[in-house]
Amino acid sequence: MVATPSLVCMWIFYIFLSVFPIVYMGIKRNSKEVENK
Amino acid sequence: MSTTSIYFLIVCLFMGGLFIFGLICSKKIKDSDDWVVAGHSLGVIPLSGTYFATIISATSIVSYMGYYYLQGWAGMWNFAGTLVTSFVACLWVAKKLRSFGMTTVPEYIEMRFGRTHSLIASIIVLIGATTLMAAQVMASVVILQAMVSWSTVTCCIVVLVIFVAFTALGGMKAVAWTDTICAYVIIIGIWAMAIKYLGIVGGFGGMMTGIKAINPEFVSAFTSKITPVTALGWTVTWGICNFGAPQFVGRFLTATTPESAAKSQGITAVMLGIFYLPLVIVGLSGMLVLPGIEKQDMVFTSLVTQTLDPVLGGIMFAAVIAAIISTADSLLLLASTTFTRDIWKKFVNPNMSDKTELLMARVSTVVIGILGVLLMFTMNTAIQFVQARAVTLMGSAIAMLVLIGAFNKKVTSGGAMASMISGFITACIWYALGQPFGVYAALPGTIVAAIVLLVVSKFTKPMSKEQLAPFFPEAVEK
Image (cartoon, rainbow over all chains, first blue to last red; front, side):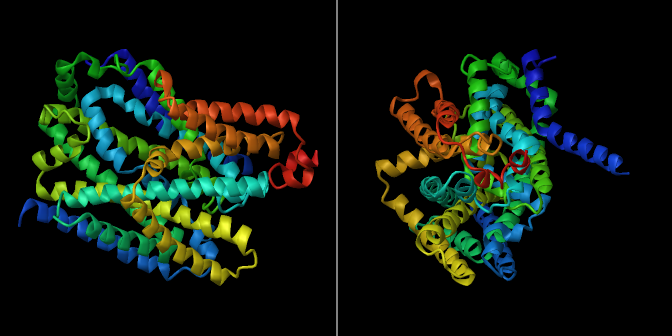
């Protein structure tokens, strides 16, 4: 593999920063909807 | 038709479209709240679009592309802080700030800490926003002059007329929706260029192999120039400092609900990822497509003019103009709102009618727009100093009042005043010392501001229950 381990870690870090907030909000909203039902 | 004529035609069509769109939005403006915060009617899409387009300036495209071209993957650390801001805003800050129900950042500061704090913050914001806006207009002049042989004054007038007119008439609604259009033009332009380059260099694998052959450090997260300490410094510094820039934080306050403020930041984080990934790919594959460019700021123009067909090149120039206008209009709106609502209405004429406020906001937009550009023509050292450091200075003075003040009820008015002054002065001193150890002034500025805020708050008179009630209703009830 051409990419170094540190670069792969950096990619994971960026994916986490980009995607986690919206995924977390989605999960939170779903669990609230379930509670309300 | 020559290549530059095609570039110019596409840019003109784009700018004309924005102008017309702004005029349409202006018909829906009924009062000053409509103008300043779009009547709190902005949903998730325009909110994330305007935040994204405001934070992405010409520098983000032109300079960063060149930076990745010269530094490899490690250069990507320069936008980690921007992502951290959206991450923190989505999970904690945006919802909290919007729940207070204020319309501007100085208004929040006034309600939370007092009138004097608000006045100081307003003056810092007004000066910072005006000079930053002027810099964006000048950047657009450079781009226009790459296509037409107009004088600097003519280019300034054309750009000013377009974005000042739609900002003055349409206010936040026009700015938010034109910014959203700009955001998608930027993303589409960069992706088109990235896909074309990946095709040329043999896909992602071909790009990685090619850049590794040029320099093995280019496929690593850190290099001899960009160390883990540098990366951490960038991430923390800008992640915190952006909270002191009202052109970003003010967007949270315009959301329909606290939840949509938070959600828009989640979408912005995704949009930032979708924007920076192709930008990095273009910079890296650009090394293989057109090797040998030595100057960072020449990379974008060289790649666009020498490797793209005229239509795609025109879209790329339109994307840069979009980045400039969308940042400039937000700064102009911020400056005129700060002047009208946070300074004039509060300290000079509190009994101003809503109709007068709206008229004044529109007139001040035109005046500040012209004044900002005139400042650029009479450039002196003091203006250059403020312009290059506006976000840092605003961040050092204000960020902690937003980040800590909104969550900690023990923060006092005295602590906030001491924090604003000490953060601002520390950043100025750090600049005067030439930013020792390669540490950006924003880092010591915000650290000192945070420490002073907490320490002075401990030894000064606590805020009364009445003052705290709008911000910490549960704690006050207990």
